[in-house]
Amino acid sequence: MRRVANALCLWLMLQRSNLPAPPALKELGEIALFLDFDGTLVGIASGPDAIAVPELLGKSLEELARRLDGALAIVTGRSIDNLTSFLGDVSVHLAGSHGGHVLSAKGAVLRETTALPSEVKDGLADYAKRAGILYERKTHGAALHYRAKPEAEAEVRKFAEDLAGKHQLATKSGKCVIEIVRPGIDKGGAVELLAGREPFAGKTAIFVGDDVTDEDGFAACNQLGGFGIQIGQRTPTQARYRLSSVGDLHEWLQI
Ligand SMILES: O=P(O)(O)OC[C@H]1O[C@H](O[C@H]2O[C@H](CO)[C@@H](O)[C@H](O)[C@H]2O)[C@H](O)[C@@H](O)[C@@H]1O
Image (tube, rainbow, N blue to C red; front, side, top):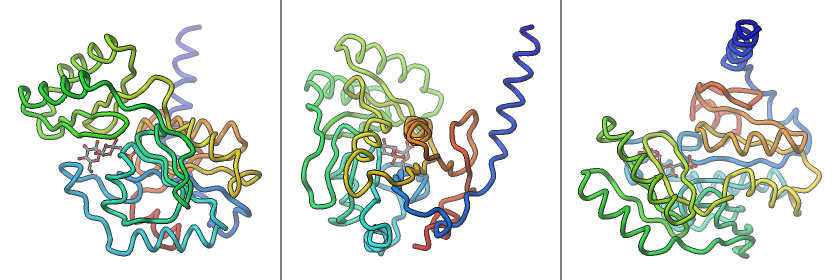
């Protein structure tokens, strides 16, 4: 029985790893679009500040938002301050820190969690120094990056999980990164919040992302009758479609 279940599981994963490309944007009717940032709108780089952001990306996203009658949000693990330092003051809906901080296109605060205790942030920063890895300060969270020292992953993860546990906080893992956030914060929550409001309400919800934390966004869109689009290949996934690269996404979005 267990062998059959395992085989079924493997079959499902293989199916998911070979996802089709999504239909063209103009064929999808009225959509509410949620876009992840790193690995989705821009390629992965050696560190958070090393990303190559096309000069006109912010303007192109504003233009895309106009085409979608405003129903566009960027949903990222980065803090909003950090995101806008790369995109400029872009007037689209923004969900930063994995949904811990959500702003409308006009800058109204729709959700804001409290910052992490300074003891936690200082603990992570001190640990990063000792371990020779990178600490990323965030307004509503904090991250440890081990891309330059991948062999430290297990140790870094243990440190972050222990520290989070002591303070009843949660962790999130991504590409060579582990972050501490307030419990209950995830990208799915940001999608649910925005999807219930104008100009998103009543439209087909679509989440586009590349990483594990984007699975919450895919799941929320599935729940709302929409779907997810994965960038690159990672299994298992709850996305329905797949695009191979950041470049393919830009082409699909026509930005
Ligand atoms: O939700 P996202 O927009 O995908 O943000 C996830 C994290 O992205 C950034 O880190 C990742 O990208 C870096 C630059 O390519 C890379 O060096 C790092 O290894 C990746 O984890 C960002 O620094 C984090 O704050 C985001 O949570």
